[in-house]
Amino acid sequence: MPKLSTQTVTLLDGDLRLFKRDRSRAWQATFKIDGRWVRVSTKCRQLDDAKKRARELYVEYQVRQKNGLPVISKRFADVAAVTIAQMDKQLEAGAGKKSYRDYKIVLERYFIPYFGDRFITSITYEDLQQFGKWREHKMGHDPRASTLNTHNSALNRVFDEAVARGYMNRTHVPVLINKGRDSERRPDFRREEYRKMIATLPNWIDKGRESKSRDMRHLLRDYILILANTGIRHGTEAQNLRWKHIHLFHEDGLTYLEMHVNGKTGPRDLMCRIGVIKAFREKPESQLFVKRLISGPARADCISLYSSICIRGVSSAGPSATA
Image 1 (cartoon, rainbow, N blue to C red):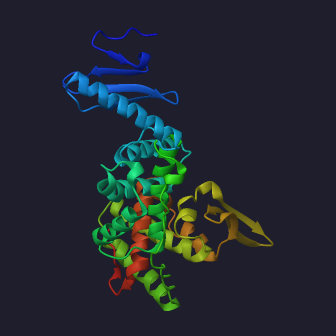
Image 2: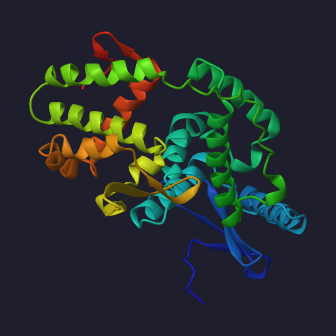
Image 3: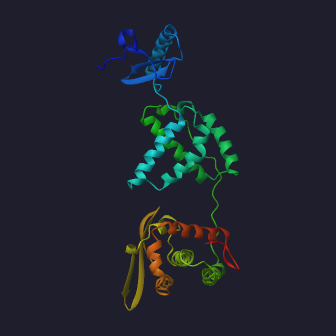
């Protein structure tokens, strides 16, 4: 058994101890509950008052443990920080989900600023209702159901972390409800719109700045042609595509291009239209920068440009993006 400091005061046959921290005039109490050490301030400067308060705290924590209440609680910001660190660790190891990045943004942008100083055990359903109003005001609009799903998943990870570490019980986790508005499916491109977009892309590419900017525009054109002629889903399927997933073969005098993609519905093979082969053969020099950029940050920039075209449409001057 470690030797106690000469300034440590023991009570209840050593089960309860009082001590002072450096630069603090208040007495601290420490004791074991269910095999775990609990340290709490008595907020008393006089020893006699601290002894009385320490006995009360000891009984209070024993009652909490007997009734299934968490013995140790933490503030929301502390548990959220641990949760974010765990997700970052999994992402670095290559085992984390891509959605972890969204969870991190949601926690840092919304939940921590609102609930940061609150004890996680004190967050109730009513508090979440008030948070919803605050969030809607901060966002400037009524969030969609898909957005709230992401928010709820991020918050649930914090609660799961708190339960796993004994900071709260599962029965005390508030129920999360999604009352967001349904997402609206964007309309498909009409044939004449698609033709107009493809026709204006070369002029838009030539107007780009030299080096990476113009390369990005070439890459975006190839990206559009590939999506339009394969049926690959914009997003995960396109992001996971690599050269090793592309297979060119000949059969009965015809040339075929096959791609293997993997997205939210799982892996699948698909046959491409002739337009995809043209995208690779039409400008062979573009393959050099495609190979260099497709796996780096430029790919995300390209996808962002493509999204802006899908959302805003194509003007007579070309795609409404500024790469």
